[in-house]
Length: 484
Image (tube, rainbow, N blue to C red; front, side, top):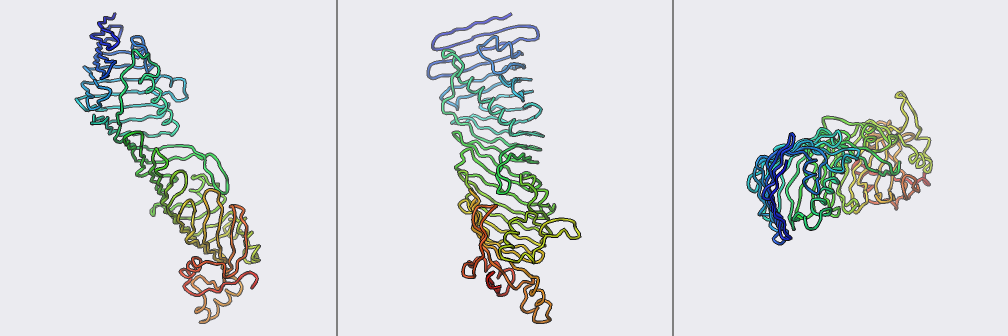
């Protein structure tokens, strides 16, 4: 049974009373819709109704299942005056299946929503949302401001995926388009808010957040990689217009401390911070595969501190500091080529030794780099290896991995070993790392298959000399391969 009292003119739709009673349902609705400027809408609701009943009463419904309940809930606004928006009463909804989401892999269900309005404030007392088997809970409030609405909402989830977030955003956009008239007859169009700004923040605390993306590395090319962030704490900040800023205050990525900031406008830049926890040592062979790097490159305990900035799709600035101890370089193709060219292969023999492991062992590795205009610049690269030390300086362009590097090879077998064992004389002329001679080579061209060229003394820049000077603290004899 239903009773309706309405007035409908080209200028205005006024429902003085819409009352209905059905098994398990009853309600009372009033509505005042002004179609001509100043466009406005005011409505009130009291009762309990199913979503399919709403669809039968009106032309359109945005939910295919669920229930609405109201306790003297009222809302009103003027399309061009956001500061005039007002709320009153309580509105509750349960098990609302978002229209068109039932056919998707992950149906979107608002399991419960509880809203409480007082004047310019609408409190979100409860929000429980399901996207497939992923759950989101939240609470917060909405405040009316001079130029629009200000949000302050906190969301919590034990597990959430980027795929589900994208599904939710797309579903809400489809609902918004319908709500603002894309599929509604012009005569019955709901007044569209004009030039309203939605600002504020949406905080999020996630036990885990997963995403997949294509990652390109110099050794393995482009391949899809699945990442999972744990203990994610951050917020989405809404600025006037369509600009948003997302910041992750803290999280764990592959057991690394991870922080990040990015904007909806890519030109404004992205910022990333990665670091190891000094109280929880990590190993390269465990972390690199998690980051999408095939683990046949290097292994060993390590510490990391990285601070990177990206603008308009290119790396703009930042620095990376890595220290590794008691490790092994597993990928030996490039090193083997270098040692063959400078004719010291007899000093470099790949052995499994007592550990049964392959590769080139090292006691310490230091890598200090910075980024400038999409170039990765090696300020200092030092490897204290078994049988020789390596010193690296130069840069690699991050677009095409084009390298311009200088490598010094400092063997300390053969006559260096003899000098170090001579009493007094050896102590005076040998460095603390027992190396006397260094052989320079140039590494130029695209990695991982660059051109290797022996260098003469005059080709070496001051930067590489400074690395050696700081490390060894004594003058160096630089020999070209032709002078051996």
